Image 1 (cartoon, rainbow over the protein chains, first blue to last red):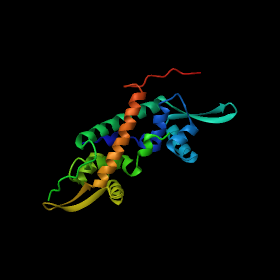
Image 2 (cartoon, chains in turn brown, purple):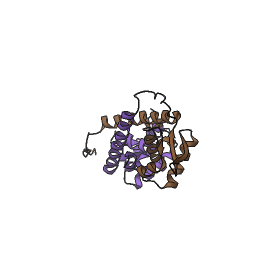
Image 3 (cartoon, chains in turn red, cyan):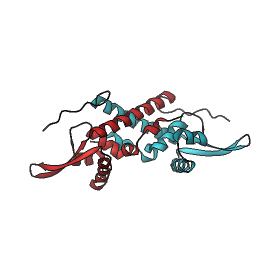
Image 4 (cartoon, helix red, strand yellow):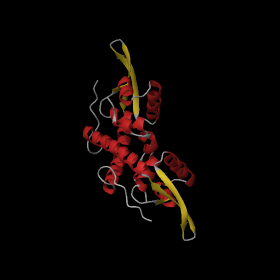
Length: 114
Length: 114
């Protein structure tokens, strides 16, 4: 009776946070400006989503300098990697389930039962 | 520079609505009570999410009787199928991208650069 979407955690599933985590998972740490551009978010919006992830222990924020430029980096934590892996596993189930019950391309109109 | 999460539509991506659409996509129409149990939602919460999808033209609600029992069914529309297919395509990209950049199972601790 349970459905794969029950395995999704809102903290991770929200699309911008999913974007932050997937990008952060690909590198040791990721620059705030790079995240903002990749996800096409405002700085304020990105900050809010990073805070939600940081409060959940999924990312850490690091401030420093690159030359004389102040920089903010985001680093995914082991807990963040684990949560992202669980989300991806649930999404994988959902995508495969969808693929097996629907046509491979544009869905054809179904015969109408009357 | 664009990221697969930019292709996600909040109307479809929200996890309960994703659940409603994926279940509805598997049948001609789906019973309200079945959706409620499968997704472990309260009736009120399920109703709200169905309303959001109905306002977006992605599902239609049908009321009637099965014997003497009043019933509510939810039916996915062609627009709903199209939106769900787009969501699944974006999620598929995300899942494959994640799979190709991370270990297949539990992520190993990364060497710390200092």
